[in-house]
Image 1 (cartoon, helix red, strand yellow):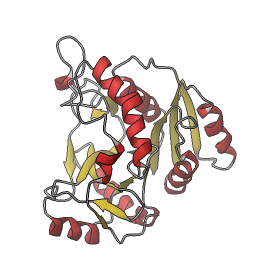
Image 2 (cartoon, one colour; image 1 turned 180 degrees about the vertical axis):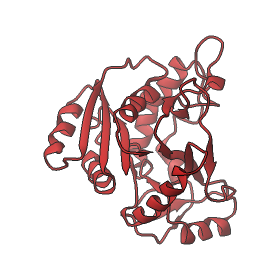
Image 3 (cartoon, one colour; image 1 turned 90 degrees about the vertical axis):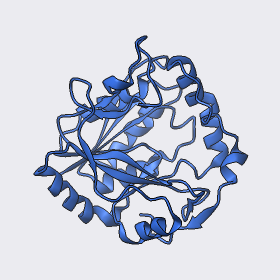
Image 4 (cartoon, helix red, strand yellow; image 1 turned 45 degrees about the vertical axis):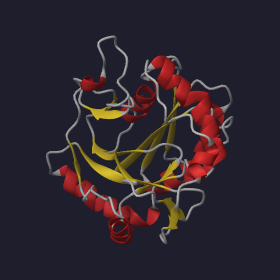
Length: 267
């Protein structure tokens, strides 16, 4: 029923917990496809070695240039196009899907099967500093992403985000939109109220909503700060042709945010 697809490169060099990611994905979905781009380490080999423990894991190799501003979307799309199950869930390697909520995902997928939208926008919850704390800074703290969608679509940059010079307007796209074959945005809908802008709404959401994805990218502030400085900031500034002031963040900037205990089972 479900294919989880993801992208990867330099997982070993950057000390990602790829084994936990693969274990989580493979326990949830009938099929897991990871596209591994050319790496400076043995990411491809270590992921391929896990196939003996996870027969539903498929590893494919890509070699897109790291100077390509559309890099991230292209790798993810290669993984997506290699999937075979009816419903697709796109996850990054630093995200986890709660295993105890699979029945709810099945119900939502069943609704999607007989409806017009291509996708439901699923909430993503950032964990800050540990696996129990969630950031709260009086802003909208739950993002909604194209995690769950039907087959027949692509990941890439939507037409409206491509500037006249061919570069990406990063205020409109991160190169990983869910798009139709002609490059237009796929029709997607929220399945919950996305206006979560008070602490009370936030807490009520966490108590009542069983469908979300955990983002672990903020657990190690030092690592996150280094990744932002060393790759993504350079990528978006030089290749997308536009400055991104909020990417090169110091670790101390992450630590200043207030967090609260979410009280939910992780996986």
